[in-house]
Length: 351
Length: 284
Image (cartoon, rainbow over all chains, first blue to last red; front, side, top):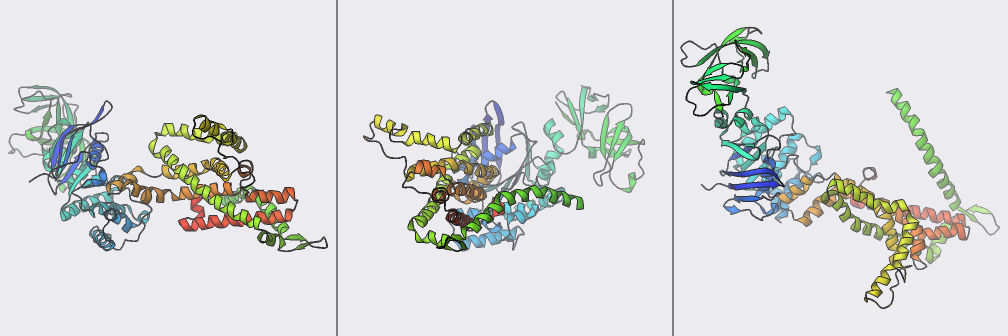
């Protein structure tokens, strides 16, 4: 199947500064594609080039097989939901959502009908005449999305639209957005610096750093097998260690922790281990795993996200370990020594 | 809570005193005077004659209507001239330059109305800069009469008032988020539609607030019509001036003054109604 969006060798330079550096990717029709990166990584510039607000220095953007070269934003089959939503404050909900349809000079009846059914779809039935300034954060969010979706764009671009919401509402909107996308089937391209948003909602996530994509993968794969040290450090939580040496299949970290890791065909410099990769009190039968004793330094209680900060015996290395909240470790105290096991596959090494 | 209240009232005293001394008392005195009329016996009595005189003499109410129409026209012209400037200074030029440019705009105000209007006399007179340039470049043979006409008066009124329109419009445009313009364009709006449906409605409070200032300045101005307008372009303030200082009929002058106040207030009220604005919102 032909991808709905193809981005070919796209580069954007501002003077000597390269904001977007020769990026290539394509997005499948009906997918939820996220671009994840820190601030200043070039993700917003990339989105604005797809929307047509910025002109690329070189490269090509193709939507539904058609080059977007020289096509202004108002004639591209994409719509954008802005970070600050950009609702028109002097119009009510109905006028905001109907704004794009009116530009297409559709008959009044049809505009009214499509606006009403779109409002119903995003759960704002009966809000037609409300002033947008009187709505709550989540409702404003939905108006902004409805305003774009009512035009049936090929692609909906979303520029960190959940950024301004409080945590509880953001968690809720994450699920809602994913369900909405599944239901209507429009391709979403979602920009965020929040890895949880990207992982929860997307079919595919591109991790962006310094104007380049480090990795494009499904969320689970991104998390399980990060391809670069940047992705390993950026996506999800990780313990990061500097590697001192790698000799005879044995890693020695900077603070003298020795671990065996076979078959590396490069000289590793960085080691990442996820907090949940540690097996607490591993059974003897559990064959080739790295076993180590750790002293509990502090317990960082955070409900289901509780971790313990530990120090490895006979070294200075500090390690965060996820602590399951079940009866087994209820009596764990600071200063206790626990046995911990790590599977060699969970040792992620990078040059 | 009690304490805050007493401070509030204490601070309110100078404001009220100021309003009372500078506005309420003189106006009450004028209002009182405007209903006083010297009867045949030489006695001052209560009467509507001062107001009736206004309607009986054509020249008075014709000047009155003309002043109103010209003031409205100058206000509209001021909007047309200054809106692009305000838009340019807030949305096109980089911030660091726009500050400097606003400063340049304000220089004529530092110089004062009288001097800047004499400047216009130098430009517009029969052997002034413009006519001399047109003649020497062979475009015209004889000088065009520009000074002491409605044209020169309009330019003078426009010039001395339009800056007061730029500032409130700039502050309104400044608060207009660029993403609103981008969102409209993204939803398929042309530049003209964005201008008409987004930028203008958003800026209306600034436009109306600037418009009221300009209109009030123009309708109450005396200098520009007097030195640039000449005989043909009589302004209603000149009628009031004549009553007070030429014929020494303070009672008639007071009546004219109140008619002007009534006129300008009702036009402002009408403008607010038409644009759907409220005075307290425009005032900020």
